[in-house]
Length: 411
Figure 1 (cartoon, helix red, strand yellow):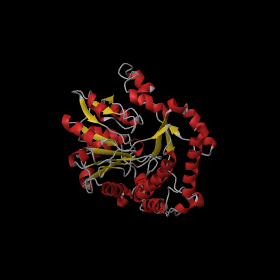
Figure 2 (cartoon, one colour):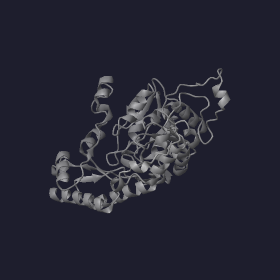
Figure 3 (spheres, helix red, strand yellow):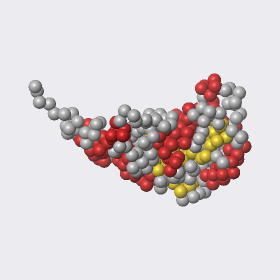
């Protein structure tokens, strides 16, 4: 018989996978190192010996200042798990903003609950506390404030409202890594923080996410929700205590609660851990880019950059401003075309308001009728989201110049 080396003990030369000098700045040497370590450790059978998932969760909790961190397949599953842990179920209501990715509201539907839309602040584009207060009913169970574009909501007011009515607060911090409010890292102000590792985020592993909380019991509910309701699963280092003979025994009972298979893979965790170690670098470059845009936009009367709360520090997932066509007639389309003509990279406008999406209109056209959130409806068509994920001063200067030339050409 031909002697063949076991695939699980073979050395995987990741150097051959590297794109050399053209490698993206977002992928450093540690990403390759950790993937190599995982594969050399006998992946997949030997992956438990390496446990990048555990390393990532511990490091993430420490960096953000939370007691517990539980990893997930994506940043939608994180929201659903937090809602589950908060006791949100069929018939309950959850207050959400309409100006954000629809995943925030879809997670509410996934729990059988009803998303109730509160309007936004016209200048900050985040959920408006007074509108939030006006949407509370006896069925309200939670609030999901979103740190849209990296800007923290007015969390003092949100937390005060939640305390008055006994509501859970689940921070959607998918776009706000290392942003802060009143000295606290976004995601640690409310009861839960939800993060996404999708490709456009400050750190990534392609797809993935994390829930953080300081509540041990809630963390266990979140962890079990991600792992098919396994009774042996807990949160934090050493939270999953598995006796091999016990779990192998034919009388062993595994499932103590309803859960899904939302666990992050070891491969994704290895990549994400390397990204986490560079998170400050990733955020710093976005801040640097935003500062360059800010210097150009200052003084322009017909566009208004997103306002950051007095107690807030933005993570600038995007540099976002509102056009005011009523002042000079500059429309979103005209700005898009002119910016590209001067060398600017194509940008996105804001998502359609969530309740305006066809799915929501089909589900309940009366509840989600036009005029529900008039401020958001007036702001959304005129938002410009400039990219900030550049990591060299030459590119940043070129994009800032394109913005300046665009503004001057319309003045």
